[in-house]
Image 1 (cartoon, rainbow, N blue to C red):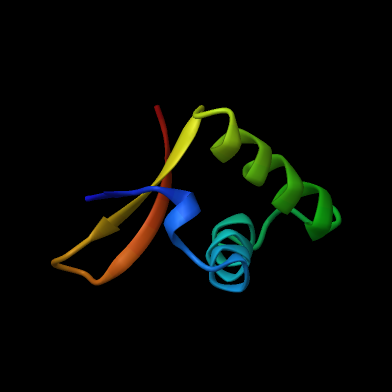
Image 2 (tube, rainbow, N blue to C red):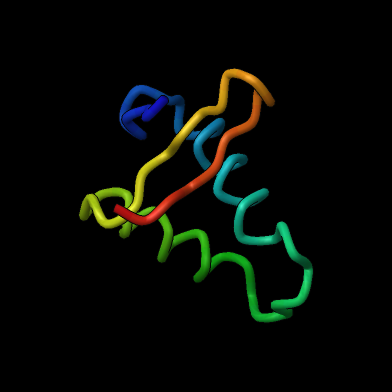
Length: 63
């Protein structure tokens, strides 16, 4: 299910994005610019938040 990023509190959205950008643990670049980049992509509707009811997990996917 797609969740509009504007429906989520900023602190929660930031936590979801942080988990997403650090998920694989292989990118050792600074985290803050990656978070900013994902936020910009959400605002530009290039990516979206999706919640999976079965796994109770959230992911960010390209549109």
